[in-house]
Length: 282
Length: 287
Image 1 (cartoon, one colour):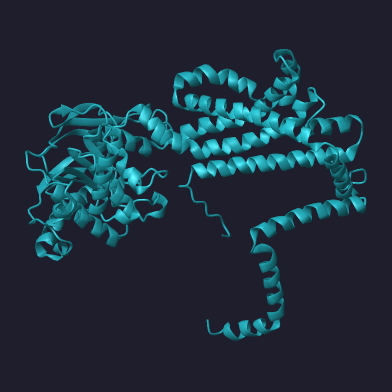
Image 2 (cartoon, rainbow over the protein chains, first blue to last red):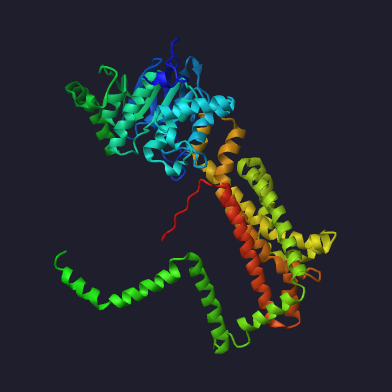
């Protein structure tokens, strides 16, 4: 439906990109790198030999209570920080630094305040050196895709939280990344907006078939969005369980009312409860 | 709610006319911001005139002080003679000093904020020179510069340079501290130069702008100091000369004129910088 009106945005036909391979990733923060306020504190084991593989085109959710290192893990995949041990491969290429092949949507609003919606979304294409006319076409269509065409000349300050995150998502997607990394992108939004954004994200994902790694602490969100959920445990952060979600696609907002959805959520809830209690005690 | 109803009604009747009066006054003086500001100036000069006329003396002595009326007379006298040459030469000294200071201060500040090696090479001696007041530079300015004019420009430069420099350094450091915006650039494939020009530079602009506004004011601040150095012209020169000849009303006139020109040019700088940042919307209390 989307591709009929938006000729530049095509559902890919060839083999999909975006295989993510996390091999034995451990992360230790010690006093020198992070805890400057508490000198000589114990090194903190944030992640302990995490392994998992994400298939091209898959929607994977990293789910866990706060403090389980899920954001750290995502930052390692993005290349923002280097793991203490282990490595990450994206499409058989080792990750050494941040790059345009891995799009990132931040939890905080991260549009550049001095650029309009259009200019923010255009950024990646400008960096790639794509000619202006082509940039205009592409950005225009991506803005249409998330319903922001009307706000192309607005500054971030004039946008609502949901609009800002939609713009952030297309800013990452317009670059055609192999993987889209999302760090609790809807956590700051109100419940209604959050649900709409989840549905929109699924629609976009089904069109573009980009691999998504989505970090969240919200069980319903993970179940609604993901093909697979990696439940993370705390102290140290690790993958506790891996759970395929067999709910049919395409998914719609009212699917959350079905018994099947409730049953799956319940299953995840039981898995995560123990870890949440553990993280609250610490 | 219901119990407070009759009480408030009686109060209404009592103070209706008072309320109306205060509302009229409020509308007259505070609804229009320009009018509010005029009122503040009228009050300032009015209080000053009253203190002079009554010979106020309590710790601070107003008895010997030129009153606004005397200052006005001196001003009229100044403007009926040849004011242009004084105002022009002062403006020239301040603006050239400020221009050099803002160019050098911004560029150096960007480098110091961005590269650690530049910071380590430059900051020790810059910090050493920074606290030195402009007046202390007069002898060296005479020794160092070929003409009195360049020496004077150097003094105004000293005043403007450090606020611009320090604000720019801090502004760059602040934006580098905001790691999310830097990461936005990185994960879109931006190289260091792109991050600098599209993220760090516009992000530092508000800080640079405040440095320029303060720098502009400081350049005027140093004008009297600069014009002690030499010359026959300049508003600062008149101020200093009048002090030497114990002619007090022109001193106050010179002071106020410097204040006025300084405020005006700071305002222009502020406006200019605001035009460069259309994305900034400032909503203050009471708007």
